[in-house]
Length: 379
Image 1 (cartoon, helix red, strand yellow):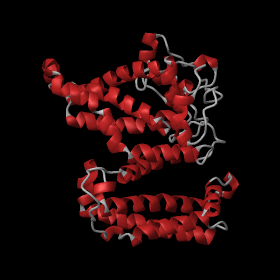
Image 2 (image 1 turned 90 degrees about the vertical axis):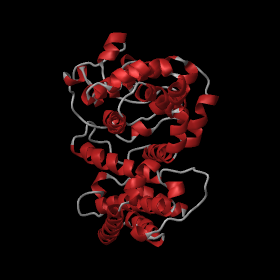
Image 3 (image 1 turned 90 degrees about the horizontal axis):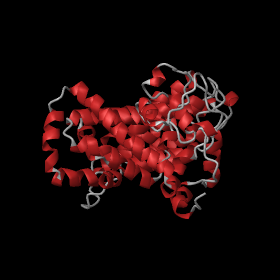
Image 4 (image 1 turned 135 degrees about the vertical axis):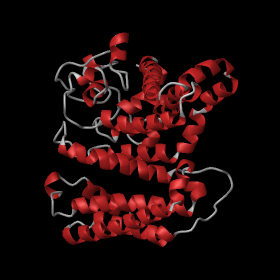
C-alpha cells in the first residue's frame, strides 16, 4: 500500500511536460477529485449522524442532491477510465476508480441512512467536499491561467500537508464552532446592555449591515492578528501558518487548531452579538471562505490603486514575505487603510516578495506542527 501511495504522489507531482493535454493527467486528476467528493457525499448520506453537517441537512435530503451524487460518481468513473487508457502511469486513474467504486459499494446515490449513535457528534466530510470543490475548482484554473509564479505547480512542495489542514479544519467544524462560539454565547446570554445597539444595527439596510460586518470583523481581526505577531508564545501558533514556503489558494488553510478556534471566536463576536441579520452573517461567512483563498492565491496583477482600499493578493503576499521590509506588516484582511491608520502598511508599487516563510525551523508534518508552539524556544 505504501508503494502504491508513493506512485500516486509521483503521478500527482509529475513534471509539466508529463501533464499536457492528451496525457491523461487532467482526466485522472479531476476523476480523483470527483471520486473523493462523491465518496464523501455517500458517507454523509449513509451516516448523517456522524458525517453530515446540520446546516447542509436540507440540501442532503433533496432528491436533486442524489442526482448530483450519481452524476459525480459517473463522471469520476468516465474520467478515470479515460486516464487509464491515455496514461502510461496508472496510479492516478486507478485510485480514482477505486474511490468511486468504494462510494458505489457503500450505496451510491441510492444509499439509505444508517444510525451510528446518539452522541450528537459529527465530522463534516460533506462540508469538506463542498468547500474543496467550490474553492479548488474556482482557484486552481485561475492559478494556471493567470499565475504570478509560472514555475509553481498545482502540486507544489507541501501540498499534502496543506490539504490535510484543509481536511481537518473542515471535518472538525462542529468542535471548532462549539469552542469558537463560547464567547459570543456568553455575551448573548448576559449582555442585556447591548440590546439598544442590536436594535439599531438590525434596522440598517442589508448592504450597510454587510459593510459594517466587514469593517468590525476586520478591525477585531487586525488586533488579534497583530497580537499573534508580537507575543512570543502566540507567535508559535501563527508561525505554523507563516511556515508555508509557497503561496496559493490552499496555503490559507494551514493554521494551528488553537489559532483557528481563537480567531473564529474573536471575529464572530461582532457578527453574533450586535444584531446583524442572519442572512448578512451567512453571506459574510461565504465571502470569508472565498476571500481567504483569494488573498493567498498564486495570481498575478499588481493592483496598485485598488490595493490601497481593498486587500488584494500582492498586499497579503507581502505579509508572508521573508524580506525584512515585509515582516510585521499588512495585518488587515479586507481593508488596507487599517494598516495605514495604525502604521503597519507596506505595499510598494509593482513589487512582489521574492520568498515566503519564516526564518525559524518550523517542523514538517501536522502532528509536529501542532506541538511546535509548546516546544519551541522563543528567539
